[in-house]
Length: 121
Image (tube, rainbow, N blue to C red):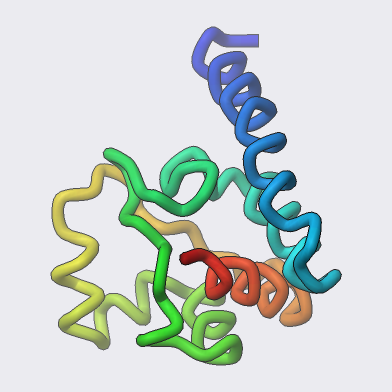
């Protein structure tokens, strides 16, 4: 295992506790969304509680801009959404990582991930 993969694995595991502790009283779909947030390595760029970082923006208070359905659609192909939306283009500037496509995830999982992200305050 390369040092970078080892670091990412350790980082993901350390964030797992932080993310899970905040969702214990949340609905099941939000809890499952939090697990997806960890397993899909969202914490690497967005932080364990969506606070943002060098590689990705903060995800808190996105309910002003998204519904569960619209965020699940965004997750399907983030780059296409960014190309269509000036606000998203401006927000994406300055971050070193591109948001990956989650089109391989079933829509139910993208909805759960969206529910979790929209619960972040």
